[in-house]
Length: 258
Image (cartoon, rainbow, N blue to C red; front, side, top):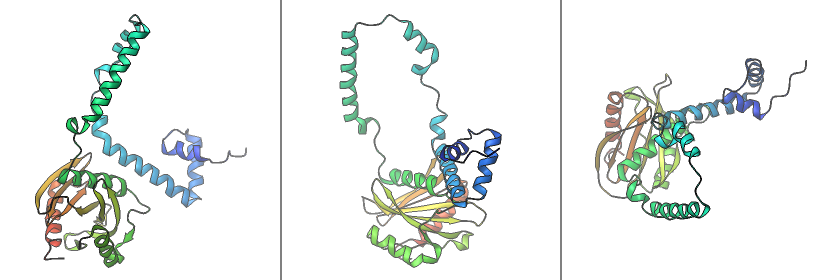
């Protein structure tokens, strides 16, 4: 029997774990002979794992009472309202929604300062740290070019800390986008698969800010500002491991050290 050709639906089915055992073996055999497709599938799997880790706290929240199945059934059994009442209710919802949108920053303020810095670092860690194909844009061998690239885009002289003394090697880095503008992202690993990232960008308020711990999903981190430049270190390691590294980076990136 001739095997049915492998298509995009099969690759997506493998990522989503929707294939039966026989088709899965066929797709795996196809990927073994097509390294580019294998790399793309691996990236999709890693991205899915990263998104699940990032949004795990939200998924763990209890289902709102209004979505309870019993309540939904009871609501559908109630007598239907006249059309004019439904239209009036819709108009009130529309006006209320517009008012709520206008007050969104009051009710749920957008993170600023160190909190925004920590959030951006955690999001970029979730995206790039699991990437096994191209986690960085410039490799560690281009350290000087990396420092020059960051300095030019951030309009500040920045350095690339050497953490080899602490057992971590520089993998490289890339420029990333944040709500506050461009930021430099450096990635390090311990040679055994454990990675962490350091994000740096200019702060809107000059001066220093004390180091603050932060947590997002399965990652931990520390964020601070030094001479108007913000830094945030993020990794899956225990805070007791990350804190000394954050202190080492703060010393290495002080204006006198650069």
